[in-house]
Length: 390
Image 1 (spheres, one colour):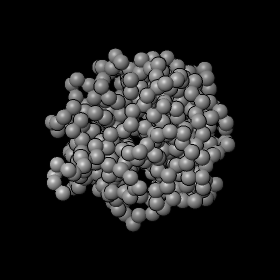
Image 2 (tube, rainbow, N blue to C red):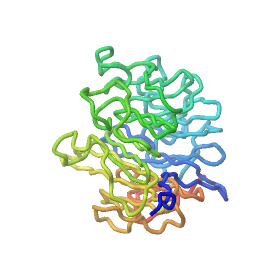
Image 3 (cartoon, rainbow, N blue to C red):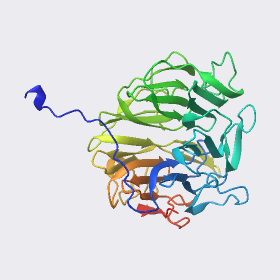
Image 4 (cartoon, rainbow, N blue to C red):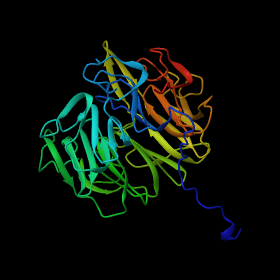
């Protein structure tokens, strides 16, 4: 076959959201848990009018309903108070058109000089210069501004500075991070390691290993360097794991429940899928003790294929794989009954939500916190349910 007859390489581009009716969502994120052992689940959507709607768990004000609204979980999506002209979301932080960062729920929100973790039921504006991106983790947050990358919070994993300079227990105000030169930054993500995704598909990381995603003799590694994977089109990060797509192939790495060592999946490994993938979402995993009973919460993953179909695999005790069953999915299964193609998928341990290309959001799985967003509390579903956007 002649070279000019070969098909072009798959670029991994996600499908666009085209709003035809209101309400319409243009982006979808998860709220952030208080810790790996916290089972509270919720989601937020950026709406076409520049406001944000959230639903699900609210014990730490993750829904952003205001100081007088209480902390009850809510299965009916409602707008986060005081937000407008929002352009970008990362968990419970929003970036508006002016570059201002607004955060709510629980995280290192710069309420005080050091940036210790606080709880906010009403969004607060962070005292930072205009930003282009924000990344929120449980203990660390980062922002990209004209002067570069700044991170703040607790230095548990060397994400703010080498531990020799500031110990792990130190809580620090915004610290400049020296990153390698490269293409403009497209995305910024924070777990126990921090990641920057550039327009050319290069990703650099620093912090804990896993989910550092590269070989390093340091643990933690406070020095940003490229991970062992290039040409990345999309990346998703939890506290201890990550997934990415490049050229239609999905890769995942990080903490694996049941592995013989913490580094069993330290480097990106390809995943099997029925078709080329444009995005993968991953979940936290861990072991908790409830009423003297040890509960293992294995991982689960979901991905959007080039066709717009959604596939899930892994833990499925609550039907969060979306194939109509509660049997664990040892290979990728197709989510059933989505009315049209998906643009994004987001996962939490016991539930899944997908943003469709028509701006609608559908969720499935457990619903103890109202995380399905259909107005029903503690009524689970093994098939997708439409979210009642405000």
